Image 1 (cartoon, rainbow, N blue to C red):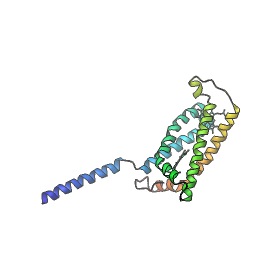
Image 2 (cartoon, rainbow, N blue to C red):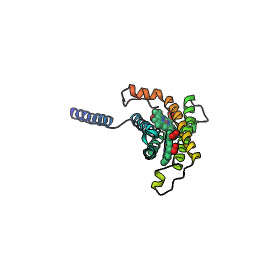
Image 3 (spheres, rainbow, N blue to C red):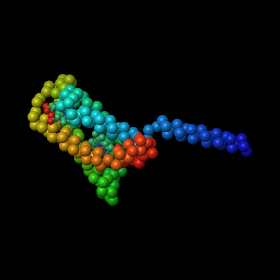
Image 4 (spheres, rainbow, N blue to C red):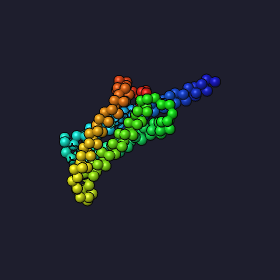
Length: 178
Ligand code: HEM
Ligand code: HEM
């Protein structure tokens, strides 16, 4: 009887240790989101200031931002699918607003990126495509990237409570999802 008890408690202890090990090693989804958001913010800040970094850096960093942005979207894929399914049903007002706003910033981001590639002075010549200075596309790129700054500001403001919450809890695992 006592041998059986000892075995059971040994198994329980092993399980507990395994769980503790898992908890300390694995990042929670909140922590992963926070890290990716932080990287996106830093890379975007560098991207949004070509006057400070010069155009070659601006163009190359935009290709670093693209995969970070893709990961940001993929990490929220479940939310995107679930909200799409519920968009014509009952939804909290801020979720509906975020959904529409995320679509608009997504389109603006793609537009800023595409117009950037059209006016590229470094990346396109690098792959052998000659430069064509087009003031129309330059003004579209300027306008879309400036709008993007304001739009991202609102995107961050909509998630301000979540950001402050994660920081206040000291980047703890047990945080609520956004
Ligand atoms: C510098 C760029 C960006 C930063 C720093 C940023 C930051 C954030 C933050 C803090 C959240 C909430 C916390 C989380 O779950 O991660 C979030 C959620 C989200 N972001 Fe972004 N974001 C950026 C760009 C974008 C863009 C361009 C889109 C366009 C589609 C987007 C789509 C989403 C989606 C779908 C969510 C989850 C749903 C929701 O809005 O609540 N993000 N983002
Ligand atoms: C979505 C990401 C992007 C953002 C937010 C962005 C932002 C900006 C900003 C704020 C400027 C300065 C505009 C001004 O002087 O008033 C600029 C200029 C420029 N960007 Fe981007 N950009 C992005 C992507 C790209 C890409 C992908 C390329 C090319 C591969 C590119 C190439 C350029 C070039 C060549 C200029 C100089 C235009 C000029 O002669 O005034 N950008 N960008």
